[in-house]
Length: 226
Image 1: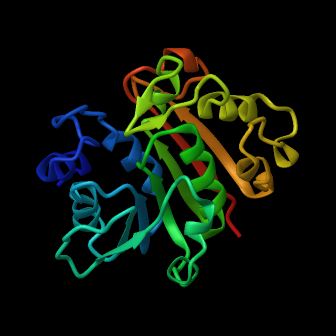
Image 2: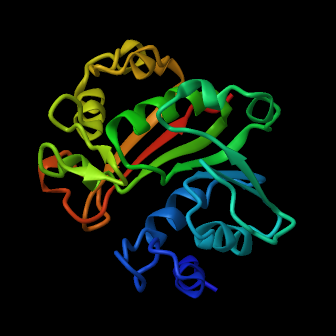
């Protein structure tokens, strides 16, 4: 069964059928084909549909989900953690520090600029060498000034995750690049072990034309292998 079929079966909008129908499956199949997935973490649980889909697609992997409150997910290979994407300290509790390194981390949480910055800064050290960190639905970076998502200001008037990573992609010396962002947590992130960054837009192709990412979008960060 293709990943898209699995996504559609479980009703997650990562496929091409339900809700926003982001159609991320072709990209995920492409970027994850070169790694063996043992541990996957996705921020943002909601109804757990995508976590069930990942558990089916990666039958030998442990799937971790994180959100402000756990839900009833009856699956032996899906474990839940609590976090607050507004508070970086919530990612440094004993349960977080005991986690194994992750082959894949996906931020499908609050979709706000500060959430992107805090979560990446907190969890980059948990990505296995050669693994991937993905920020989903980055089209929210282009929401109108002053808009809100899940009760949280998007704040694209003072910070924009798409701009932050476009600046990284066009920088001359990426290994010593310092992210131009008002969020101190992300500004401190060590870019030395970033292997590659891709900004993927509405039509599932790489782009630097970030202003036209309006319906779907991913930022895919690959960590350097050992």
